[in-house]
Amino acid sequence: MSTSPENAPSTLRHSLLTALTALVFGFLGAAIWSYSGLADNRTRSFLMGNPDLLPQMAEAYEAQESAKRLADLGDAVLDPFPGVVLGNPQGKRVLVEFTDYNCPYCESSLKDVNRLVAEDPDLKVVIREWPIFEGSDTASRMALAAGLQGKYTEFHNAMFKTGDVAAAARAAGLDMERAARDAASDAVSAEIARNLDFARSLGFSGTPAWIAGGTPIGGAVGYERLKAALAEDTAG
Image (cartoon, rainbow, N blue to C red; front, side, top):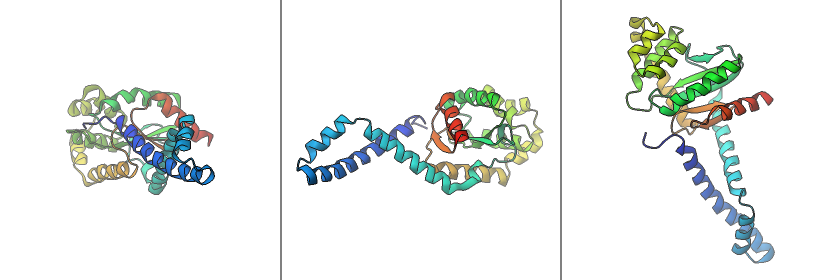
């Protein structure tokens, strides 16, 4: 994609800030005009004296809308394709990652996910294969086929290490004939289409994207942000 995933949240936030600025000027201006007759000058003074107001409003609004979209999807987005999980498949704490094997940000995030898994034996990482880069579909299909053989983790790590589908499949020890059939199956095609629908519904525009602690998060946000989001869910 021509725009990096990390820029998408900034673009959305800029749009929200613009809209909220208009609203604040409108509502505050009307109120101040009513009470003092000063209108725009007083409104500007108020905003200049409270520079954190608009970013805070944008962040709160964005979080509210994201929570609504996630609630509309229900538990389906948390349910993995068979075998396509990292960490503890029975874990009570769930992290969802939308990923693409040709995404450099996804590759750099792998160490963060592996660290979270190593630190928390109760963490289940549900991977949603979302091939949005050119040439990624074959890798995503083989990854899902690996999940059906119970070897998703091995393929996932090998694919990011080698960048070669056949080499990763061999490293994972896949039954290649079965994997080829499964990769071309309707079930795998349906899963990829479903992940695209999930991503669009949540407002994601690139990979990686996450659901951590019940919160949709876009971009390669790093270990600390993901850990904090998961901790908030535990605290709740």
